[in-house]
Each structure stands twice: as C-alpha cells, then as structure tokens.
Length: 322
Image (cartoon, rainbow, N blue to C red; front, side, top):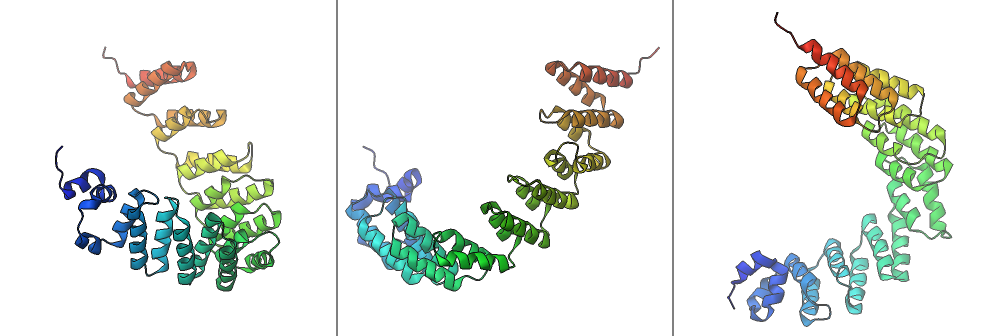
C-alpha cells in the first residue's frame, strides 16, 4: 500500500480525519501543540466513547477560558451525542462563565437540549436580572412558562419599551394578540423603517384588514423605484387606491422596454397589468430586434394578440426601396 505524508493526508481528507487515521503515529509534541480549533475538528471525526475523543474533550477543556470557548465546545459536542460526564461539565462551565444577558439566554436554550430544569430555572432568573431592551424582554417572554410571573413582567416591559425596528418586527411576527400587533406596528412606524423592511412585514398574514392598510401605507410612502411600486401593486387589494396609485407611478417611472416585457410575460400578472405593459411597450417603440424576439415569443405561447401587435411594429421598422 502507498505511503502518504501527513500533510498530504490533510489535503486529501481534512485535518480532523487525518489525525484520526494517523493517531498512533503522531508524536507527543504534536499533541502538545494542537490548538483548540484543531481539537474541535478531530473531536467531530473521533468515535463516540473512544479514548481519543475523551482525551480531546480533556484538551479542549484545558484550553477553554471564556464563555464563547465553552459555547463552541457545546456546539461541537452536541453534534456528536455527548457522554453524561461531558454534558455535566459543559453545563457547569457555561453557568460558571455566563455574564451577559445573551450568554444567559444561550444557557437557557442549552437547558432545553439537555433537559436540565435547574439550569433553565437559573438562566431565567439571570435573564430577568440583566434584561434591558425590548429585545431582551421579548426573549424572556418566549422563554418563560405560561404560569411564570416573569412572563407577565416581560409583557409589561415590552409594552413600555422603546426598541428597534427589528425588535418590534420580531414581536409583531410572534404575537397573535391584536393589542400587541397594533402596538408593534405603531412602534415600527415611529422607527420609520425602509421599504424592504415593510415589505417583509407585508408577507405575514393579516387577520385584520386595517393592519394590511397600515403596512401598505408605509410601503407606498417609501416606494421610489419601478420595482418597489410593482411590489405595492402586487400586494394591494383589487380595485384599491393603492393599486391605482402604484400603476400610475409605474407608468411615470417605467422607461425600460425590457421591464415592461418581463411583466407581460409573467404568468402572475393580471389582465390590467399585462395590458398596461403592452401599451407602454408600444409607446416606447422598441427596436426591430426586440419586436422580433417578442413575435417569436408570441408564436411559442400561441398569443395571437401579441403576435399581431409585434408584426405591426416589425412592419414599421422595414423600409422598402422602390
């Protein structure tokens, strides 16, 4: 069998598997110099319950100093079904190292994976102590059991809070309470938000048509480009003022022959939009090459009306010498 140098082996199979394959040939010096990140790579390849994996966990533990280090060990070990002793040490270290709200929130999430009630209880207490923003209190709310007093406290803090647009968007997408949906929308309006952000909101279901009107009003107030007005048109209810305004704006802005043709070809374009697209294409004139392409498209789709119009436009482009 051919002999492969370790560096070549790493290139072929990756560092982690290369170490597993070469374990018995590697020197003590190699194991002394192996880094935290390298340990993670090898751990993922090592057999569960093997001496190699146990040794790697010890090495990672020795090199881990911060919460983030133990969080990485948790992620690494979780993918490989941790032993009981490994799980216990990870839980203890995460709780020992956690300081910030986000770190305690991560501990809380870990408690679900490890089914550790005490870990979850402690994490929730620390989260309540450290929560400051609307986003923090929203995470507390989601993490608390329905009968926990902290859930009521979190709800009160959410109602009182300032918060960012993104935080209120998360709250809006989570709650089904009319009061909180309206509060979230009100807060997002105060924060302005971009067209794309309001577009994301429009994708959520609207049990109350008044909520949809609020969102469309914000989108229309922020729409500037042809494509943005097209989105408003597509999202607006049939025969609504939003639809009429959007179509008017598209005609004012839309000076691209190709964009109108793309709308005409779109199978989701309604009759009104398709007719407008065709009218605008005719007004723009277009080149012989473009109308020839449209004529061939009409032939392929058996679109007699479009074929007739394309042929008329092609006739206008031809000059016959007498």
